[in-house]
Image (cartoon, rainbow, N blue to C red):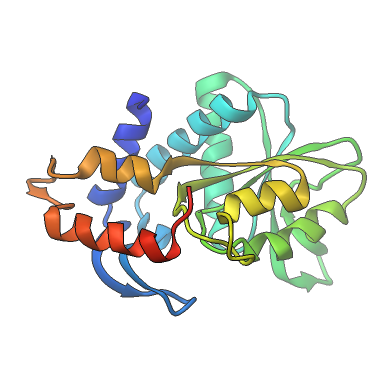
Amino acid sequence: MESYKQEFIEFMVESNVLKFGEFTLKSGRKSPFFMNAGAYVTGSQLMRLGEYYAKAIHEHYGDDFDVLFGPAYKGIPLSVATTIAYSKLYGKEIRYCSNRKEVKDHGDTGILLGSKINDGDKVVIIEDVTTSGKSIEETYPIVKAQGDVEIIGLMVSLNRMEKGLGGSMSALDEIREKYGFEANAIVTMEEVVEHLYNRECQGKIVINDEIKTAIDAYYEQYGCR
């Protein structure tokens, strides 16, 4: 596993973004782990988060793209932090763009925030996590409505490796099949478990035998590889 992935896994735990226990998701599923990207709140956390995203995007998509699109609302700081990091790490000026939940009819009008998306632009979409793939159903038409643009791929921070809306393959695999572009994550839950199981992080074991058993049982029911 790449060193930046190991660092990112520990960073999620340190930032109290990735938690283990018992959680009820919006889908109604009872999950032994929960990720909340809204817990990244400080300048140093957002700086590091942007760098991890930039490294993963560069690894999977290179730098032949123009715009990083972060859907409102959590995608807004993600796209800003990552474009800054991309410029710093790779010397490539990527434009950031997000959407508004309501169309603005005065001043900086329209549905977009940040850069406009123009004909010929290549776009990478950035999100926090994709459980079912439902968010892309809203994001995809917004991006494609801007003109003759090419969506290069999607990058999320964590692949939960769960069945998507279709119920047979993961949400990221469903996105690849339905929309025809790549969908990747900085890390997968398989990598998280591999790195943290019975290993001390922040002075304690966050995935012990009990949590590992609960995770295995969860994936027996909802998981797919």
